[in-house]
Image (tube, rainbow, N blue to C red; front, side, top):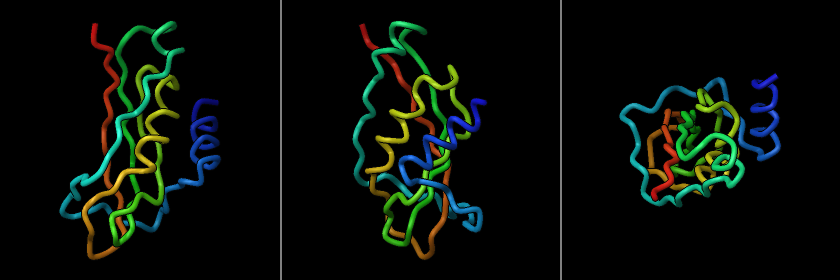
Length: 110
C-alpha cells in the first residue's frame, strides 16, 4: 500500500525516474536549492525529526526530471515535502542524463 501511495505521489507530480538512466559518475553537486517545508501534521503526529532518501533523475543541464522515494522514516510523513522541494533544485551540468541518491533530513529546532 505504501509503495503504491509513493508511486502515485511521484506520478501526480510528473516526476518518475527513468529505469534506463545510469547512476551519475561523478556525483553532481547542488547549485540551487530550496529548503523543504516542514509538514505541520508530521510535528503533531510523530515529533520533530525524519529523513527521506530520494533517487533524483537529472538531465544534461542539471535540471531535475524525476524523483523517486527510496526510503523514508517515519514512513510517509515527509515524502511529499521532499519531492516538491527537490523538483525545483538545480544541479551541475553533466555529460549525460543520470540519477543519484540524495538524503533530506527534517529537523525542528527548538
